[in-house]
Length: 280
Image 1 (cartoon, helix red, strand yellow):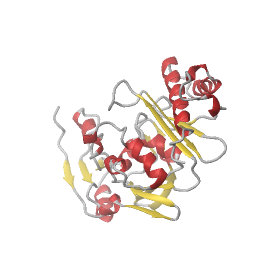
Image 2 (cartoon, rainbow, N blue to C red):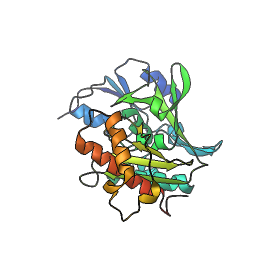
Image 3 (cartoon, rainbow, N blue to C red):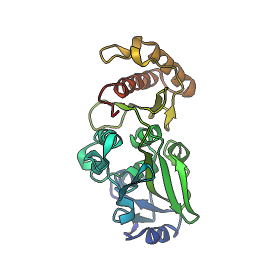
Image 4 (cartoon, rainbow, N blue to C red):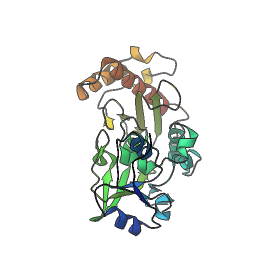
């Protein structure tokens, strides 16, 4: 299906982008366009103007400052996959980025676009929530900083106000002891049927899931990493039973199979987080 008619502009600075976005509520920003253009093709979205922010230098920078890595919202999945961020965090981000769709998609799709789109099956919202990331937002009211869970309110719903842009993502670099992510999909490149991420910064691991919950959800369940050996069937463990029970409580509308897949994904992510090559 052909796109509906729309106006197009490509600003060269954040100031120009904000000015263009202030023209009306049906003016939308576009970074990689991998989600927006598909939605327009199916008439799910019908903006009067697209503001292409893909060439704004400030949104494409990566730098380390004050103990955190600051990643511009226009940084593509492919750059992260190719090791644009160094160290254990960088290796984990590269691993997660490499599992997103296909390379052609990764060369256009951006980390900020994924957050702004807030698809429950997307990878970055769950990964960044597990890494205690914060998001810097800029708009007519100035700058503000949000946690990922404050940004994403529900399925394809965010707390962004009209005219606001996600400028960057900050991820703390120190204090991590391990990471693990597991995606369950019917075939490579498809959206996940279940996705879980585990980060270890304290005594207790932080277990996060996406997809089934509609937004990143931390599971407050008792787990026993020692029982989750790589060669063990995880559905026989108490960790699986505890995780499944919490998922059923937190997401009562989830069907039995989806809840099961999410609990298994969480167990697999735990196995990876406690493995020898987990980035510690």
